[in-house]
Image (tube, rainbow, N blue to C red; front, top):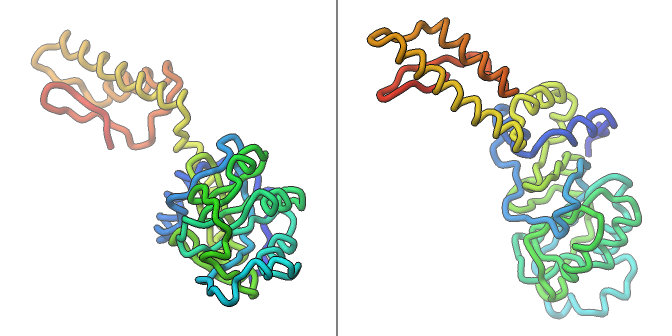
Amino acid sequence: MSDITISDDTRERLAGISTATLTTQLFKRGLSNVFLFGLQPANPAAVNFVAEAFTLRYIPSREDIDTLEVFKDYDHPQRKAVETVPLGQALVIDCRGVTNVASAGSILVTRLMVRGAAAVVSDGGLRDWPEIAALDFPAFAAGSAAPTNLTRHHAIEALNEPIGCAGVAVYPGDVLVGDAEGVVVIPRYLRPKWRSTASSRSARNDSSPPRCVAAARCAVSIHRTKTQWRNTRPGRPPASRRARAAARSCASLAHARVPPGWRIRRARGGCRGGR
């Protein structure tokens, strides 16, 4: 496991970046399989977290081994994982994509929260879903599933080893970032290298509703200004310098930034903006 530890500064920066921006930044670095697809938060009001991964792996269960008697052992790997997760880290559970049984329940999830874990992430189900949904704690899973994990899962004793979760490789110490859209995995070796790049990119890629509305209004204003100018000068297309100046003026009034490299292109039936 890497001895690199996520700093408070990095944690704060990543907390302000959307998973959409993070996936784009990782794709620029050649990583396309980083989003844990198919997971949903139990509590939509508790979704944001940034944490290093602490892993637990399940393999298929066997009836002669995985009985209810195993839960009498307080060193059972599932319980041991819950009691071992370091403060501020997230428990990531590999269920092989099996969603019809639980990977944990409300008691263990509550225990994680009380111990100071940052989140629990599983590509399987969670039981006691309504109780977990009432917690102010990020819990992502494939959905609710009432049957106990023993019916399909056997917890491996080796904790905090590389696993797969929702089809994505997760290594101990990788950084998980969660928001309302889902969870992204950032390889641990990238953490010190790209904080400022991702932060500035997030500012440019801000897709919050007010900015989207402002950008849409700006586009309409640009089109109207361009059309009105053309109507006053029949037969003569507008100069690109003047068109760009008008576009930037509209963008300023609409409080939306015109991206660098933006220009006006002529098109049949009107004009449009583009690169």
